[in-house]
Amino acid sequence: MSGHSKWSSIKHKKGAADAKRGKIFTKIIKEISVAARLGGGDIDANPRLRTAILKAKSVNMPKDNMDRAIKKGTGDLEGVDYIELVYEGYGPGGVALIIETLTDNKNRTAADIRSTLAKNGGNLGETGSVSYLFNRKGLITFDSTKYSEEDIFEPALEAGADDVSTEGETIEVLTSSDDFHAVVDALESAGFENSTAEMQLIPEATITLTNAKTAKALSLIEKIEDNDDVQNVSTNLDIPEDFDPDAEY
Image 1 (cartoon, rainbow, N blue to C red):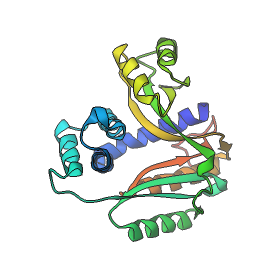
Image 2: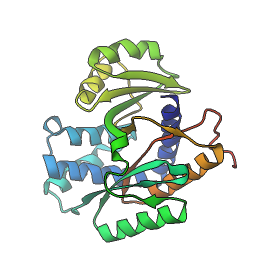
Image 3: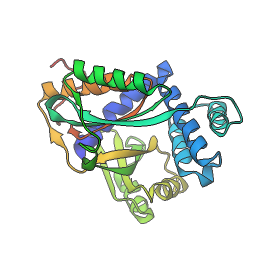
Image 4: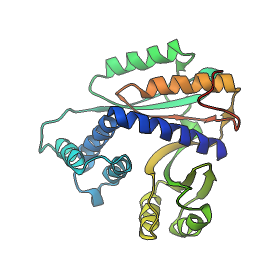
């Protein structure tokens, strides 16, 4: 899991930068609205909405923003109907990519994704071409400068977590999709404040590239994530231990 931990750390740093630009707020608001439209505005009765709210709280989104997004989803306020589309493909070095989107114009989104991949060493694949490599799991992260893995390990596993691991300043707790909210609640009740809590597609196995190809793959992923219609990009790329995201390769 060490490579995935480093990948999560890189994504977390990027996420913090995106929050300053308001990008991540826009994406989470879309997800909240869609979750509310599909499953209703009751957080306790709508697991997808609850997960979206957890993500919103992790980036300190104001409650008013969340409430408006829910009301747009339930129809209490005027909103946009978004379509969920998932693209599968490959990046530099053959890394697998699953691109989850919410869009109000599927033709625009498809053209943008195809163009970004083609210009940066990637290509689209057929439906099912890489999705079999991933499982949807809950991922809860904690700041290792505030807590130790030993502190979190026992209560996490007792609540049903599958794995607990640490790299650098990030402690990761992995759960099944069914146990995700129970583990979040148990750790919160035990006094542990998470940094992030969300559902992610986790690869069953990863591939490692050279640092130069890793940099190209991460550059492509960043460009894809910069698209306002893209909610999440999952990959089976394992970040080399000596990889420096700030270095020139």
